[in-house]
Image (spheres, rainbow, N blue to C red):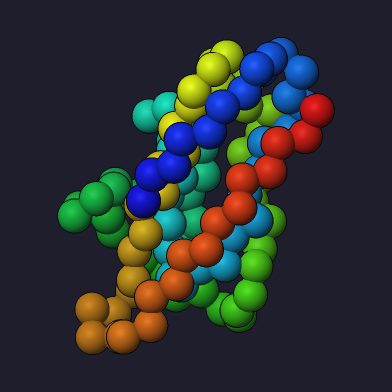
Length: 102
């Protein structure tokens, strides 16, 4: 999934984070750079390995740092690659909220 968002002054951002409800694993990218990896041991896409099922449900906060290296003034892109541990499991959840603190 991908979502564009705009920031006027990236130098004023002190923290970047995701509040995300998910099953089972994901990798988040901002402007093409990986910023978070949860439940994915290594690699990405079809080659993702060592997937780990999530214990628990509901939203979780995942810090993406200050964002100073990833963000740019104007339009930015958040992309999230989601993985399920079992291919026969009908449950699939990804519900993210991007948090910017200044």
